[in-house]
Length: 363
Image (cartoon, rainbow, N blue to C red):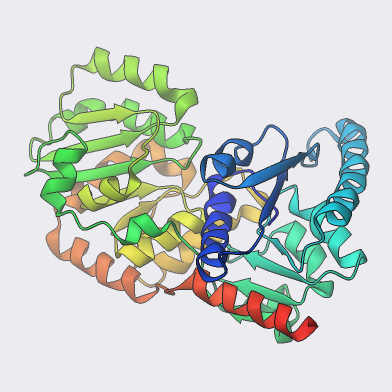
């Protein structure tokens, strides 16, 4: 299994690995990630071995810095070959992100079958480069033949963390578990695993307005790097209906507690919202390849399955939009119903079905 960089790549990879392990307890699974990235911490915590490659992304703004990037890429290609010789995999699965490029390319050169998992509605560069020689490409959106050979595409959806789908708590119980009022309308704000500066700044600027909404409360996950700034702003405001934290470990409870979610528009987050039927306001990050988060968000907004607030408009529109929406019961029901209809269920199982088929065909 190779890829990572953000939770959006790591959590689907772990879901696929868990399904392989569930179906084939004797299977040996090795992850390959990028040194210094989030997967080097999250994957061992989930019980799997991981090897890090010194690979990094291209710097599109400062082209001269890419000499170092290229040297790391060549070094990673050599290490990838050695990993394959030592581990002897039956298949290599790439979920996107820096490390999957050299790892999957090396596997293809050695004649090892490869499966790609593309989470977004706009395909990533790494997967586009690997597609021609891949055995199968599992996608979460229709229309992906724009990027990949049509005969290799299988529509599976994105795998999500199983515990999110198995939460049996009522919204009131979940709110108590999150340490908030069990009876108030609840907005959950999540900026992705690393936090989101624009969303956080919009909330800081709107704290007094939120404080005046007595029937509403906010659970605000800021990300670790923005923790101190946001905590100090909240303390200074004196607002009591906002609970701030750098990271939420029990996301199953957080989602269950929420009447409305404010989120970036990463593919994993959208898949979670769809499978849980959660009404959402999406603020796409502009700092991603090919502006793919805007395309992800529009896929929902165009079906009245979410509300989209552009990053540039968040400062002026986000707080007002979320407070107005959470009080509009009919809108909340419509958004929840429409987003639920877009869900593709059992994605990890469908992907591992394809893994089994590929391995069986090579025996």
